[in-house]
Image 1 (cartoon, one colour):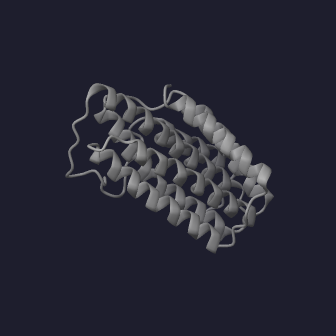
Image 2 (cartoon, rainbow, N blue to C red):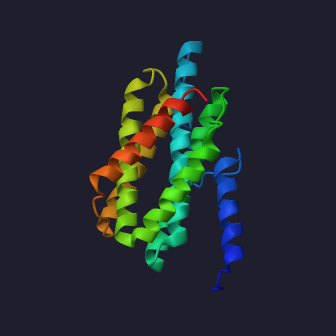
Length: 211
């Protein structure tokens, strides 16, 4: 395997960021769970659902950045590979959310570059702290994402089967990633770290719904 120089890693990181942030740059490897379903929404419901899906898309942008940052600084090759594989699986979520936003004639959050940068830095720091903390960071991130998804599932209009199918599959995947990280040796993060993550997540949720 070719050894990556510092310049190689910089180019690779830039490519990963572009794939996470540029519309239509990510293609899902799995079929969209909403295929073969239909949802007719009134204008107000469509606007609300678009806000929710925009938040979920931003959450997946953050997840991509976290995994990319952790993969960069992970100490064990196996952990690095697990971070890279998780990021690949999460790309499906990015594509599905983006597809749904297009159907709703809406857009992704304009603040995504900010969320990506913050999350990338947090992921890199988690990797530097050690692989057990890095895996614990993944587990806590996925736990919080799952909480948001479950809340959004409750807020969806009953007739919006398409969005519901997408969020349900995303939730299954997030919980699987959480369990994988814990089984691989992830440790529970200190309370101040968990609270900080929750505060940043709340800020992202409040702003991405509108912007």
